[in-house]
Image (spheres, rainbow, N blue to C red):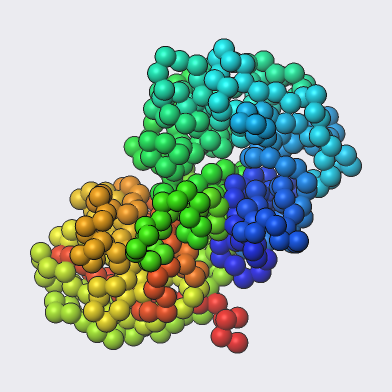
Length: 478
């Protein structure tokens, strides 16, 4: 579909993405969550679309594979697909073979269906297969979202089965079992980059989100990176794909449109206060490797290049404490918050600003700010706490202060910046937003209750803002 920054099909939410890079094209299979499954046009099961640039998507093709997340692998001239099903509260891995060597017509191999063994693995969780061929061993390794058999309940793990023929599988001990999660480690993904192996998985207990561990080639033990979480709460089920030059991480930013679990507050009507749905809009991060082997998340160049028409900066209102120059705003006061109100925010846009922190405790941007600076969405770096934070207008009211039993809404760790300079880049499309800091950390978020307002800058303490840039798509104004 042309023109979308964060893909979702009409009448549906984007669920788990199964990305594959095949012959120069990204084949994107995904679980499609129809908003109205009874709609006559709704087709269940996996859907496939392709993209060469990760900007233009589609068209979609339903492939009539029913079940949860899985994987594809090519072997002996045929495509094999693995998924998972959940009959009567049980969980099994399923196997399909392409009927015509295409990616759209699949034949279910019912006799190859298998579940956990009940010895190494608990019967409660067995899903999300990821298959890798270990050429040096002549074996296929299947990584699974599973739970180990143990005397305690923190048994979430990445399970392992091994096969020579993709049909008969031998159970092996978990490849990763941290004793930390009371639910399965979902959507496991394994890949090599340089001298490191990486294992990415999603956790929905302990702390909801995407995690990764790393292991040097030639070693056996996984290491937990300093920042072992990728993005934040509003990004899930991440899997990667790429080639020798590039690798991208595909996940979903959830909507807040259905009271699926009955958690919505009965009196407060604010949509920003509602609980997250399963599925939403596709978010793609570029993965790159830092010198110590940790992973960084950066904005894909194609997404940045979608926006080619600069919007002239306006300075509509200043609080005290500012010194202004040519696209330079200096907050001069320590221990005091200083704010700038700027031009209106369009529905789709790219924003970039460089912030030099002097003694500021917090510094960043305000999205959809009003003239009082109270209502809006604050996105800022806290250098002393080494994090990027998202805070909605709800936290700025007396009622919000009473109802939120925690400190922040969304956050992600950020490494200390060289010369205390932080480059903040933001992509916005409707209610969806993703922010990047120094092309190293990413944070997704949603904004429902306020739209069509203005961009703002703020600093609690002394800081310098330079190179404030907003761009839209030229096609949107022609």
